[in-house]
Image (cartoon, rainbow, N blue to C red):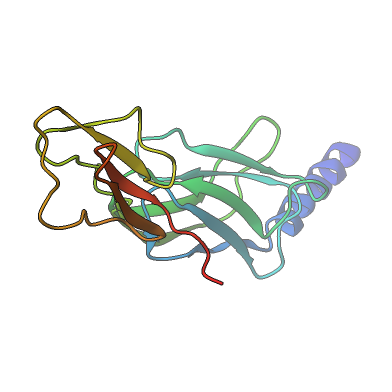
Length: 187
């Protein structure tokens, strides 16, 4: 009986020592973030960091929560998780203690708010356009350069074509060709 009581007291004191600290805070960087941008979620301990417990992190975006085992070796406080939010909105990220296999729940819980803004749409370059009576030769180059060949009755345009950055307008009345080509380096 004495041995069992001593074993029970030892077990209880070990649990009490293991539960001195708990989940203290959740921090998200950057905040606000852009949709599609990776954010860093850091969960810090309060007081003395527990060395053996379990927790779950809820991301509030419909994705599966992540279970984390704190074992004092590979998993320890502070815990950092990388996450990408696909849609703009306001999210509540919560870390709370939960029993995971042999790991008792970490004490406490903490929440952080994250604002995700819409991703900036990449600026599209204007599609090359040949003047009336002209047809494009092949496809436009990666830099946006292109050339157009005039038909039988094609007339040269009154104004030169507007070319994008790094391009210059060219025309050849004899061959009825015109377009935008990579600008030549000036000497």
